[in-house]
Length: 155
Image (cartoon, rainbow, N blue to C red; front, side, top):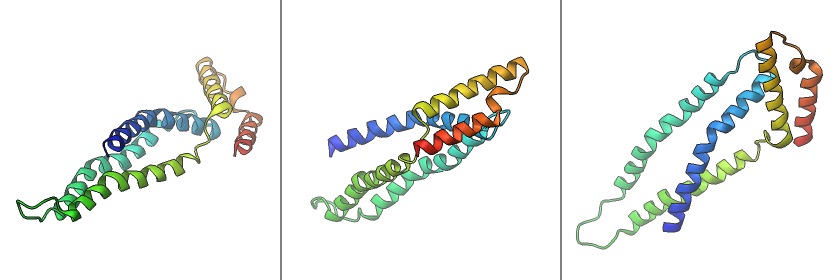
């Protein structure tokens, strides 16, 4: 159980530290595919915070309520099997199910490799063109078609 707790903590921290990078890649992809002059980063980050912050606040309270509901044993007795079962569910089964769900969802993430490099290149080109006052090249329909074609190939 100790190994699981340490591994779970390390893996979740790794994912939490990489989430902003993934979100910024999604913002760049949105800017390129929808030909936006500015990114929608504030909306993406705000939506992420809207869903994650309540979960971070409510999870400890929910855990306490679950553990408190099963702690009705009398002093002097050994560990309550019902409480041990609740602890196992909170510490092992819950994170395992959520990690499995997260793994399934991350398999749909295809913004990587050459496709990601092409997106980054187009965003950089667009930013350079925006600074120089010309808005062509990166936003030509042929380039957007090529990106959509590459995206279809990767799926």
